[in-house]
Length: 524
Image 1: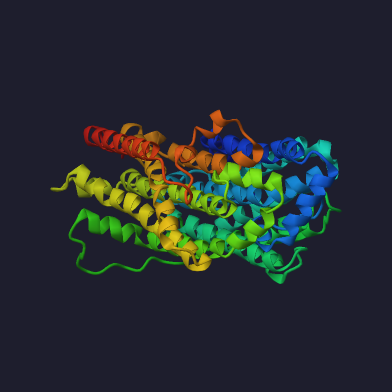
Image 2: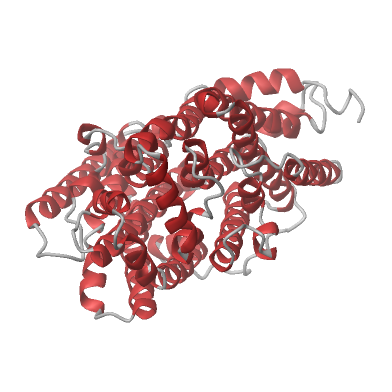
């Protein structure tokens, strides 16, 4: 690779790091800190070797828990940390990586900024190289935090876990780099990479549910499974990291080869031309056309997720039966003394927190239409801003209700229980989901340049809800998430005041954001 094709890489890398100076350090601290702090939490929860051996044996023997977290390879504190937090941290690192790479490659081309930069002394491969270096910086920071935080449990194990998590992030960074060459839109590039990540997680879950030692072929087909099979703190398999390194090199080479064979803004998967005459008669129809693919993908994912988790309910109840420590974890996450209801409440709450990501993304799609300049020609005609925004908000708020209902339906079909309590529990998540969507509307309307901060808030709520109980975080920290205040259903009769209060907050945030949108200038 000649130096000419890499000209300007250093400048673009500094620009990327500067633009991400808030998001990526925070993401690295949350991801790495979550793993590093897990040692003290699990050590306090299982304070004797016998207790750790018991929970390791019971978790590994249960297919439901193996599907969620993988098998426990060692009953030391470090081994339990690698089991409980390793997979989730690897997924978080992958998500951060795909966002960073797509943001500094395809998104730059889609907005036209890359064409302006390329008019200067910038090599053809410099933007892609800078994006990958920015992703490398994030994953290196995560690996260093994990290694330093767990060094007291064993230096070799800490280093292996850090490299496994950071390496998984880089695998999907290069996957995103490849997707950015194939597609014309940043949204599709993110969607393809996220689908690859979801498939990798599903393969690992399916493989681990069938075997207790991580030896399934399905597990070995998944980069997330490779991270697990490094076996940090359990006789480290350093050679597994060669699979990760090989995938990174192959995907990077493919991305470089493709970027050298296309023009800026072009792609290898061209968008089909539209009809000669327009067929959309309203702003709502246009919003539906723009977002129907995403809604369909989320709907299928939630239905399949409900079917998978519904099949785990009985196994989870059998697992926790005589284990008071595990019972405490489930009760903190699910909030009920009945273990079956606690597990269902935990899964429904998880679906709710993930549905908030859909709602926020759907709101910010309208923000993207504005910043790209596509909204301005529409609003120059006899179309009011509120009617234009309403089309996207109907999908954001109504679509989140739909996907939660499908998740509840999947749980019901797989578990075989009366559907009313589970569907009601799924719908009870909506006030918190709509609160985060309302916050996105407020940021879009009042501070459009900071609108993407809604992603950070939604991610923080997901981390607090899924990892916070296991880390035994103080209640004041957990209360930062609106999901904490919802009744934990299915279970006793719901408490209506929190539901009504959060619904009111969501309505207030949304109406305030729309009022500000109506009065401010459009971004151009």
